[in-house]
Amino acid sequence: MKTQEILNPTHQTERINAMDIIRGIALFGILLMNITGFGLYKAYFDATNNGGATGWNLNVWWMNTLFFEGTMRGMFSMLFGAGILLFTARKPENMNGTAVTDLFFRRLLWMVLFGVIHCYLLLWDGEILYAYGIVGMFAFSFRHLLPKQLIIIFTVIMVIATGLEVKDYFLTKKTFDQATSATAKKNKGLKLTKEDTKVIAKWEDKIKENKITPAQLKDEMAARSKGYWRIVMHKAPDNVMAQTVFLYRYNFWDTLAMMLFGMAFFKLGILKAAKSNQFYWLMALIGYAIGISVNYYEGSLITTNNFSILSIYKSFMTYHLGRIPTTCGHIALIMLFVKSGILPFLQKSLAAVGQMAFTNYITHSIICNIIFLGYGFSMYGKLQRYELYYIVISIWAFQLIISPIWLKYFRFGPLEWVWRSLTYWKMQPMRREN
Image 1 (cartoon, rainbow, N blue to C red):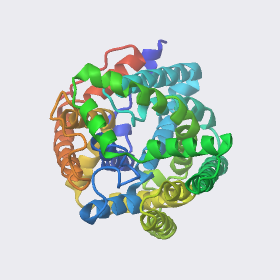
Image 2 (cartoon, rainbow, N blue to C red):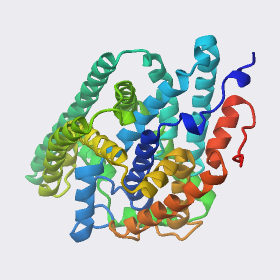
Image 3 (cartoon, helix red, strand yellow):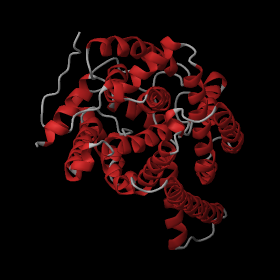
């Protein structure tokens, strides 16, 4: 029997509505965070660089720091891990395990290609598809482990990731302290050693990397206001960094750990709204109590030090301790929302957004590029931070309306259809049968 005859894309009746709703909310939350990268220059963590750091701009920064930083991406990664289980655990695998494995890895290889296109041609260096394609190949091998084993491995990886952040902070602090001492010698007219000169230059490079000047902002705005191909070439170095050094130094650990965490949550029934309300309320209470407290500490550390480089690096040491419990709190609250059955029209729309997550995710980049880059309205760097969220809310409203209407007539989103057709080497039926 041919692979295409025994393995086909997931039918609507096989979907888990709770997971679609989480995915829809997480997708919207990702745009909530990504919009800063689309519209402002090096302002994601440092509000003093661009977009404003007072009033409503600072309030928005605080909102993201307390509730959303790392949590939306975390939920999305967890769902991807759960999706690995759903894709590979269908009945045909028991008859022909090699077939479903071949399809899974072909699916991820296409995702890697989509990620490259998204990064280099659709110009979003913060894209996640490439990382999911690469890391998903590693996560695949853990799919048969018990929830307890998955959580243990998740914890070990998070400890390693935190250790790397601690190392980064102390190396940065060492450079700062040495540069400060050398600069003091220079100011006193004392002779500097080669090491003194070297460390001063190293810290100046760190400042240049993290703190922008008005001239740098002006140059970046000008570069992103040119024609499409000029922007492609301008962003190419950052895109290379995003899909090489950043992926393997930072994103790999984060993504793999959260995928395994998602597998554990799926096997425990947490992502399927299968637990009691009492379980979810307790999960939300503990998650938010720990997570938001840590997030508040990090935010206070940064703001009281006026977004200094050292304070931002120091906040990363507790980054996972804050964002993982907060992510759990979000999942618990969403499951309570799903189980309550309230606002059924909104739940249906969010589930549709989640079912079309690939299409909606890429649409975010296309819309934002048109708004901010030179082949569109050239608004890059020109809006205040809080003004970016008018765009976010407009895109949310658009996709909440369009997604359920599209799925009323079609089985998949446009890009989901392309991806499935390429995965199965067969054109999938697109229109719904009446």
